[in-house]
Structures are given as structure tokens and as C-alpha cells.
Length: 214
Image 1: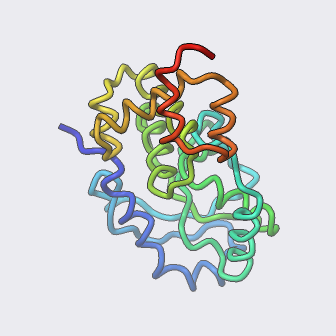
Image 2: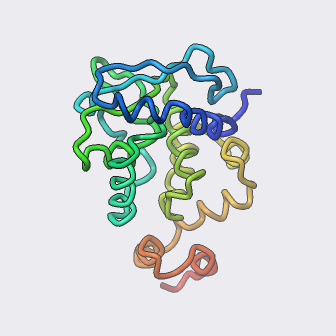
């Protein structure tokens, strides 16, 4: 059985530290290659980090994260201005352009500080793997609000026929956690908005799912 892609993300995001100094000095070059020692699936012997032009990169309109905190984005931009982009983004090729699979915050922050290139790893993912990696990166970094997480889980089930058990297995969650998260989508729009705005917690909101009288 194929292992979940998320089991190797930490190794992928950690191996770039040794290349930090070189990339800071060369962040204006058009292309730089750095050998990578691991892969999302456990074998990244052929993968490299390259410098891509920001002008050639598009965001993934189907990525689960829709809300970007302005304060956090400014802090990341300030860090990139001083240290450069330490962790590469992950992209797939789309014709002559590239689409972001993981790392949209780094892409946006790099544009804010006026960089013209960004370190990237080009992957050859299927559509289901694209959805999985996009969700995994955000979940591991706790960047999604509960409703974004619920919508992303449901999309994996609807688009690729995954069961709750498979979603739980691939995301490293328990099936009850997945089920309870998806149940939030049954709430009234007003309650969903309150969750997204952080006015009530997902735990409190779950107690309202069984209420039938609006």
C-alpha cells in the first residue's frame, strides 16, 4: 500500500538549511541546482532545487487555504528580506508555466519584498497527489482554519472517491477526527462564518451540529 505523502514532508522541508547561505548570495541568479537527499515518498535521489522566476509561477486556485493573515505575511516577508527564502516551494509544470503545490505564503511574501526568483522543487504529481500535498502542508503547519480543513477533506472524498478512513490514514488523523471535522460543513452559514473569524472554536461549533431548529 502506498504510504501517505505527508510522512516525508518534514525531511523535505528540513534539508534546505545547508543551502541557505548559498541561496541568499545567489537569489538573483536565474538557475541554481542543489541536490536533495530525500523525497515525499522516501526516494528523492533525482530531485533538485532550482531558482524559478516568480513571473513564471501561478498559484493553485484549488488549494485549501483561502485566508492569509496580513500580519503573519508581513513577518514572513521581513524574514525573507533578511535571510532569503530558506525552504523551497513545491511546484508542478503546466505547459511553459509552473503551479504552486506547497509554499504559496513564501511565494506571496517573496513578491512583497521585490524578489524576482524563488527556490523551487518541480514534482510530477497526479491530481490526487496535488490535492493531498496541498492539504498536508497546510495541516502540518496548522495554517488552515477548521472550515478550510473540512472543505479540503470533503474535496478529497468527492473528487477522488476517498473514504473517511483513507483520508484519515493519508493525513495521519483518526477517523473520528475526520468525521467530526467534515460535520462542521452541516452548520448554518452564520455559524460557519463565526468559526472562520475565530469567534467560536470548532469544538463549540460541533455541539451545534445536532441542533435542527435554526
